[in-house]
Length: 577
Image 1: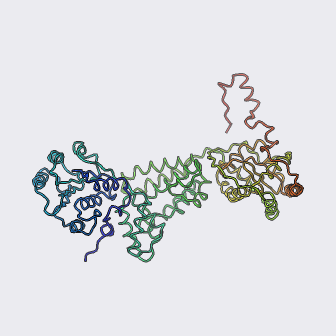
Image 2: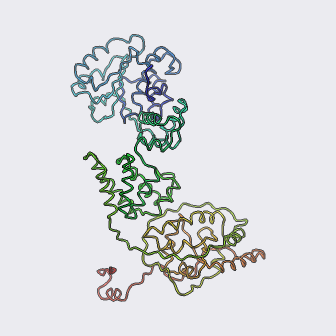
Image 3: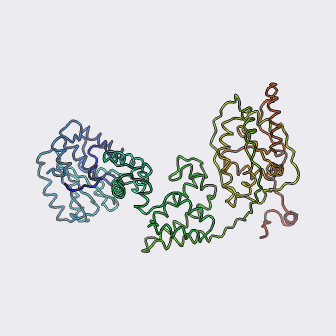
């Protein structure tokens, strides 16, 4: 027996087997149940989405003599499934598109069905018919014999005359979701006893671009490559794709403007037969996810990136950089169709990205090596603070982009007085869930050291340790007093607060404390707790911050003189480069 492709072997035989297209399936099933069959149908939509399949199911259902339509057991159903029923005629309009062919068809439709209730004509690729053929079919299509049903399928509905469309019930097929494709493929994989990883099937569904037939063809090809255990790497190899890790690595290299390393990576990819067009679109998808996540912090609406991948790329790139790279890549992709070798334009896109002038100031990050915080002592007070505290429901706070300015000062010589009552108020309201969430995300701060816009803020905070947290409040411990002073300095507060919101996802009023001082604060808290003399919790205050106007901007003496002389409306301050 001749080999049959998977999409032919597993063509749905009942409406329940159809993947997706629920709106069409439901409508047709109800019409069949209520015996409200139209004389002409037009199925339009992308390739491989089930147009011909549902046309054959409809032909079986209207002629089925069983109880459940189609039953696939009566003679009509069996003959239609095997393609040998005399009353179901499939016509390829690509090769039968002239006036003569249509006139011959019209002559035949007047004859009654030989063995079923309806004579069904399935006209595939109907948009290939000429205008003369369409006009010849008009009258018959409007008033066909009662025993005739026309089902026309097309991928290009805009090429069909409006007069034809108006005489049909039109059903618009949509691309199948990746979930529907994967679900159907798993059924077939189980029946064929293939061993396939889930991530391999998900990539196949993505490559199919909403087409079930394409998905099964890709699956068949990949299984032919490895019929023992199909993995994600196998699919990448067969279709010249690279892993998500490699794509993120390429983006990181582009962000560093390392042109040599970027070209070396590209050469390696080309040696592996990479599909440049697919790579371009995949990079755009990653950049889109970065922009979406930076503005929503919602992982559920992303297309490509998962939690692990987000933390490996998001800290290194801003929305502006992502949009700029998308523009360059999309501009290159538009030119691929004009050349035989699209890698030329992709290489130019890489050169353009690497050659972009970075207008932001480069900040040299000076890190001070400090001893590891005493974790045991920190955990002891956490246990005391959070005992018998209620859990809270954290609200999602949208993050935003911000630019690091020169206002952040990492060196503050004078000690800044901190009211212990402000810290004690945070300790009284401390909750375990909040602190654990902050501690989990705190290591991400070090990744921002590579981000020119946020490096200085990251350098000031990365050596700190979150030791207590409550709704909206955070205490950070540092080993050395200069680091404490820099974080508590009021001129740094606004930028550091925005940076913490970017990293943690929530906004916190924060205060820094030297680790030895925190040990003493811990002892005082434990003592007051045991004596039932802890202060009543109240609204969070930071007296060393609240006593200053954070919105006030210092201006130079010359700028102030210019404003007095010419007025603020026409005076513009520009920093000397």
